[in-house]
Length: 572
Image 1 (spheres, rainbow, N blue to C red):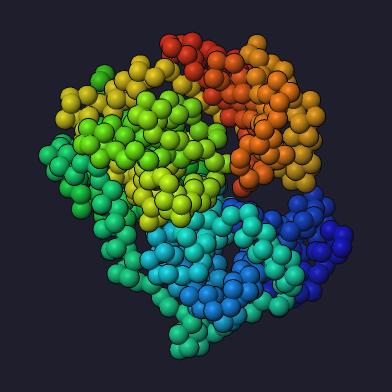
Image 2: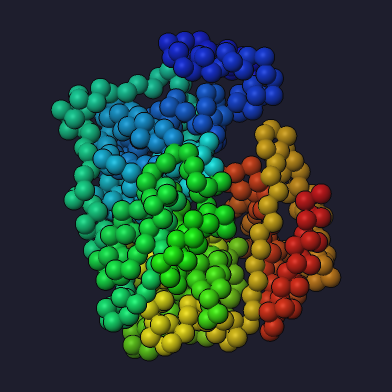
């Protein structure tokens, strides 16, 4: 069907929905808007689906949510009896999240699949935990993570508590494509409750167990008891779902000096105090810095709307604030876990850490120094969750820590996604350990750099929205595959990893990458530096990840700046 035919079909199918009809009629003569909304369906992949809210095939709306859910139900029902274990559903503070969550539950019920629906917003890690805790067959969370307010999304989790992998995503997509929008119906809510198909999860069924389990992740609880009263924290949930569990956790481990940014404490789907609810964005910390000055805080925590990521700012010895990168936080936590367990004599010989391919190579150096294995996965925490399950199935490694450069951290196996609550515990404990030594968290990071070398990482993003942007991204990746650079900023390309073909090429020799196929190119450079090119799976962007290292900080920074500038030419 043409774009115009798709548009007219929507007007026909949803003629009884006055709001949808009004929105679509308002764009009848806007060819560009019609194209963006109707040139394709909102794609469903391993990250589920995510998009701008609005009417249309390529928008997040209740009809796409219902269709995706019917597709999920059809896929699960292929497993017959297992589908009766039900699906857990959570949501965050975004626009339409409660409504989409309820539609998801009632669509499942209409298909005969039980639904466990949380009674209020919950973080992603609680959803991941709940799937395993309740022995459900799957989970769904309504969230668009750190995207701007006009976005929402739909993420699907498997029975292991991790986001579904490529095989399951393809299976769900197959059923979705065979499903008409008009075939999707909702069961009456009261009927669903009466039949026992809809079950509401209150405060006690999951939350208490989750918090109790998180507290077991403390490496040295005595540090929290002896030093915790001295730690002064400012916390901002950035209007999201972290407010209750993060504050509860900090209180229960004995951290009493926690000041919350009141203006950002309560859920707000408009995220009205910030440009984007992203703990990677320095602008998200303005109110937190102001409050920190008033209360004399020495560390700031910020979680994104679904509380799977934690951002951290710390003071140095001169009282200056530093916003840490995800790589900084991940490496400090990794080093703390390994060094503390080695000191205590309980560092397992089969211990393993896991990180994404675009995360810092400093982690590899740290693990090597402790004799610990480190595994790399494609971007997406689902692959780290998948690796944890492989360790447990084979019994060949003990999972110790996993992280991504995009502020995702995990040290548990009972959650299979990045966990901002888990990370809050670990960062607090490291801060207490540093105070016990008379140094700052920032000092600890500098100690690690001096020991292993200075590693600098940057991400260069190019936004390419709409149909033309998608075409351009494909052209860029195709061009780089056919003619990969021989050098970047004067550094020789020593090897090329093409994760789409699954081949790593070095000096004409080919070997498998060992990872699933993905549209990613990774250029290994001399001196251990690298550049990775990756179209985003959730935003209309193509990203360049640039990683450099040197014995001195200035040298690493200059090299990184040169590589970033040269790498931009790869996008032209």
